[in-house]
Length: 311
Image 1 (tube, rainbow, N blue to C red):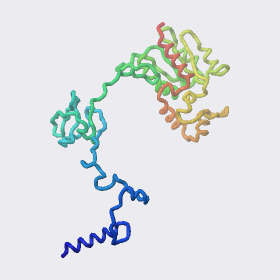
Image 2 (cartoon, rainbow, N blue to C red):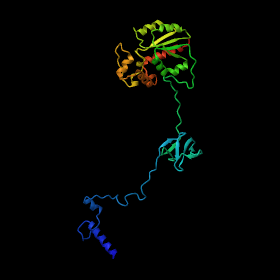
Image 3 (spheres, helix red, strand yellow):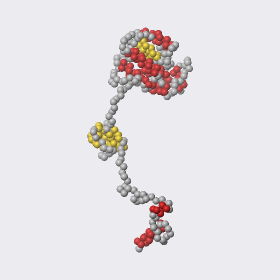
Image 4 (cartoon, rainbow, N blue to C red):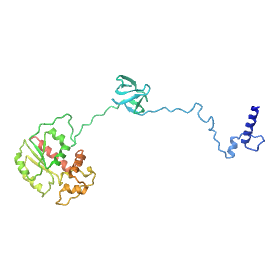
């Protein structure tokens, strides 16, 4: 008896679900009928709405990674871990953790690098190497040993001048065999020059701060001027000013009242207590001649040309 009872109950539920008064002959709603009543009906929904064969599978894609020697990789199919030794035509040689070497195909997605499935590809051929440059912009000479020092010299006023010249032009000066010496001031420049006895084979170049018309430095320079002595300099009070302000993140060097030591005044204006620390920061920020003012660059280049010129 259970079968007939279930059938009657199912018919009753269907009768209740159909439109119209119960007990009358009713039909399932048609598409046109539902459209007339404004009902929402989508013919693409239902058990046959999707593809009969299931969703279409999209081919997996993997990022390309250059197979660089020494790179650690994992072969996904065999879980072999090792490091790339070299790349051959369509395969890569991997040295496994046990020390053996295996040749594996460069198939798409065949390897893992850092836990990510990738396609290993041959590294791009390197382009022509650019000639290396020194900090002064000159072409570097790889493996060049320092030349035996010339008799000619370049003199600078103080230790900061010497360190800055070394930072930018040191490589060039060693190749040319030019020694830079510091004077610790130029008040006695005439005496030093006389003691040096410059000549055609022993020229002397002198770098001076604040070399402007009417200054003490200009008067001293005029005293030693000669065919074998060249004095060049900058208009700056101190060599610090020859470093472009933007290198240390300031718009311009602070103005210091006359009569006050320049470095002391600058540090006070910038809130720096230790001038030595400020200089270390300044020197470390200089990467090349582009970080210096043209006045200093031109003066040093001219002095190097002068002391290295053939008599």
